Length: 156
Image 1 (cartoon, rainbow, N blue to C red):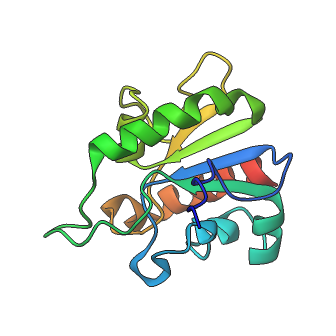
Image 2: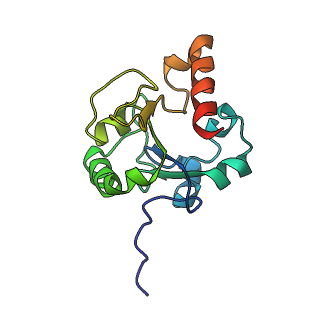
Image 3: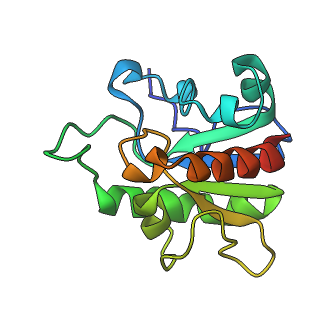
């Protein structure tokens, strides 16, 4: 029996929003359909987990958790860039695309900008801080409120 090719993303057909992460968490390794489930993004957007699953398309650039590094996780940048290139032609079908973190931003070949700032002329692609909360960015109350306002606007 041949292995099925990996889907470009998971979630509802006709979803207006695509969220792109780095890699699955260690706890859900081998379950790509659970990409970005339970990361707290649904809460920031004011959704239940079920509403998130029914509204948001999601994908990680890497198939597996890449392992731990001294600060955070390892990241296979060449593999991430290859998946980003496979995703690129499909991005226009979404009203909004959110890339999670600087490494995903880099995999798409985008220049570093401000969080939540549009990275394309149509204003559809934005970069949000990685939801792992490892970043010190999440320690500031004003930043959390900015993230909440952004995600509510994206998925609300």
